[in-house]
Image 1 (cartoon, rainbow, N blue to C red):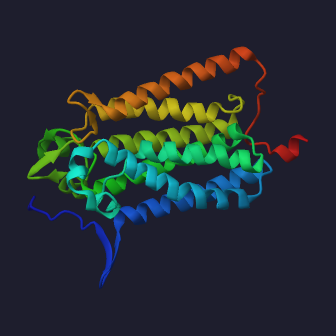
Image 2: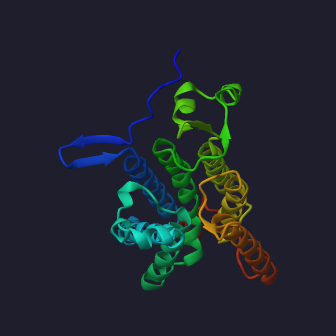
Image 3: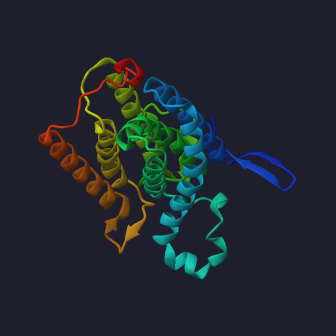
Length: 278
C-alpha cells in the first residue's frame, strides 16, 4: 500500500462561494451536545432550560472572539504585518484558553443578571466544556494542527494507530507525533470520569466539579503542551498554555482547600435536583 495518501480535505462542503469546514462542523456538533447535556443537568437542578439557551447566545460569540483575540495577541508580530488576516478565523488560529476565559466572564455576569448560583452553573457547564475540547481536537487533526515533534511512520505504526490517522500526521513532508490525540483522549477520559462520579458518588461540594475541571485539564495540557512544536510562546522559552495551565491548577487547588477549611460549603449530590431537596 502506498504511503503517499492525500491529506483530508478541510472543507466538508463547498457550493460556489459558500464553504463549510470540517472544523466548524465538529465544533458545532460539540456545542449542540454540550447544550443538550447542560439542559438535562440543569433540569435536574431545577433550572429552566431557557437559561442555557440564552446563555449560549451570549457566551458563544464572546468565546469565539476571545479565543481569536488570545491567539492574535501572542502572534502579534505576524498580524501587525498582516492586519487584514486578524478576523480571518476561518483560516485557523483560535486558542481554547481564550474561549474559556471569555465564556467564564459571560457566565459570571449572566448569573449575576438572572440571580443564578455561579458555582452550580459552573459545575453544570464545566464537564461539557471538557467534552467539547476533546471533540474539538479532531478539528485540529483535520487541519493538521496541534502536532508534536518529527517522528517516523514506523513509530506510529508500532503504536497501532490506524492508517488514516497516520497519513494525516504527515505534515510538511514529515510524520509528526499526534499530540492532538493525546489531549483528546485525556479530555474525553476526564469528561467520562466526572460524569460517572458526580452521579454515583457523594464526593463533591458545590463548585468542586468546576475546580476539578481546571485541575484535570490544566495538568494534562501542561504535559501535552510540552510535546508540541506549534505552541504560542512568550519569548523563545515560555509556552503560554503551559504557564496558564500551571497558574490555573495552583489557583484551583488553593480555592478548593480554602473553601473546605471554611466549612460552610454544603455537600450536594448533582444527581438530586434542587426541587427534590426542598
